[in-house]
Image (tube, rainbow, N blue to C red; front, side, top):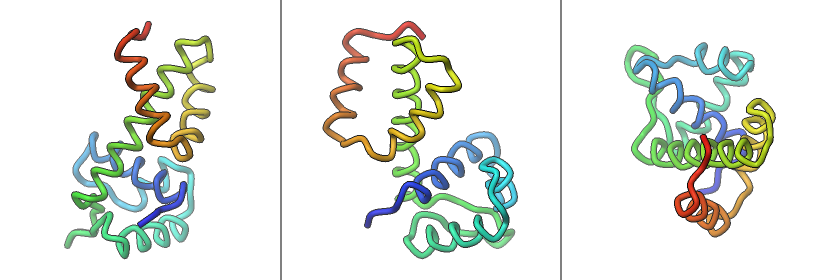
Length: 125
């Protein structure tokens, strides 16, 4: 199963929000991402169909095991790439925005090489 960049962005958002509160609703996701309720509902429906999220009896969005594993991977990429870009002199806002774009397209092989490099040589932040 391959989800597109937008689906990965939703997963990452749900993951980030769920770290702050176990009660994540579509309206929370929309507010965080700046998307309309119909857009969020459609995306959540696709993620649900793909077995990445579920909606509990109270209407809260929960990541499935598979969804949480994917979201953690995306979030790890985002954080490490942001840190790397800041370390080479990119301002934090630009680094975060660029990392958000890169995280969806970078190969696993390249990401693992970057991760090993950061682990070996450390980072300033």
